Length: 114
Length: 111
Image 1 (spheres, rainbow over the protein chains, first blue to last red):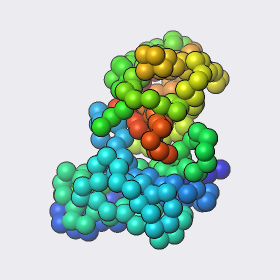
Image 2 (image 1 turned 45 degrees about the vertical axis):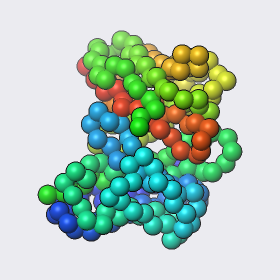
Image 3 (image 1 turned 45 degrees about the horizontal axis):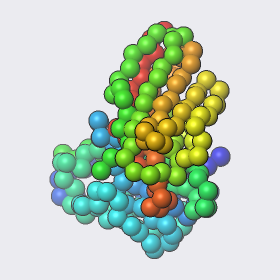
């Protein structure tokens, strides 16, 4: 079974702190994604990566950065956390194959910024 | 911006009844997928329908796709309390290998 894990289920940080959210997948997937989920807005794509050291902006990249130094690990970084970044963060991965494929999600990290 | 829009936003039914939810999207797609999310958890893939397919079944799930109307529906037959969850549609367009999600439908199945 594909397994996507996230470093924390719950996280509480203070405004201005630097925050790291880690995601690891064990299926050698090329593509990895970071979403945030807010009530009524569904999932919105923050950043994604097609390969090591590659990154692409999603729909809402402002205030975030990412790092992909190893294929299995994709980190989301909040350089200076703000209260409007309080949200559920979901990581996902999938293969890069040509055909359609499912995307596998981690359990999510609920981040609260005070 | 959201590609998919689910309707209704919330649905409450009795166990044993059918639940139907709809998804509309805006641009051309390669395929459309439905996911389920139990409260506070990650998303679980339910079913994928390709753009050249019109209907697909998986157990108690039935998905339809109408590309002329840019819409899809998910039917859960003989619902169970365990079906209580949020359901999301996601489109996989021609632009690249990433999904775009709708706002979701919250389904409550009362025992």
